[in-house]
Image (cartoon, rainbow, N blue to C red; front, side, top):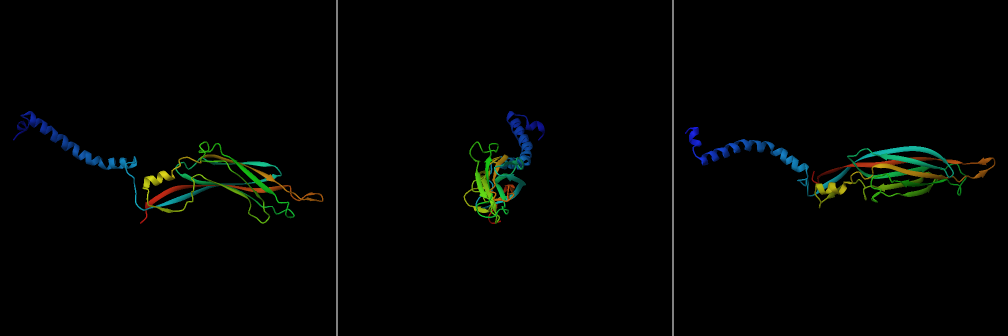
Length: 228
């Protein structure tokens, strides 16, 4: 049988054309199949891992420390810029102000400090996810004086590993994804109250030194089968 015999009727021409198209398309399809599967997974076509899953948090800490001396009624504005690490989520931010009043004669003459935040430039403030806070504390002569304020950017964040039975991998990632919430300029104003005891020739204490420490904890989510 020669080529003319294969095309001597319209039906044979159609059959031959269909066969040629199949022979060309078949290997191309299977060559492209792996990339099609990868695209489907990356676009959310797969829910990822499911069943009993271990959820962990790989934390990265960013901090800023400074020291300032303030007299009675004096204030100081402290700034903490969280513009970096856009690919990570923020678990919490903490402001600690420490002071140690060891130069006054006793009770009734202990210095103190108060602080109030101004977070209008922080992502999530306008929606109420981030709120201003205030605190105060005495500069105890025994140490550990001052105050600490903590903002849970993700409510209930502890950084502790846990096991999830009900949600799949994508649902867990959605649960902990707060986008850029917490990015921006964290600002607080601290004000000193100096309780100086009068003595001959002047005052024992006319200012206090305050150590200011900002801390932000970022995290990357880890998810794997609980049996691993």
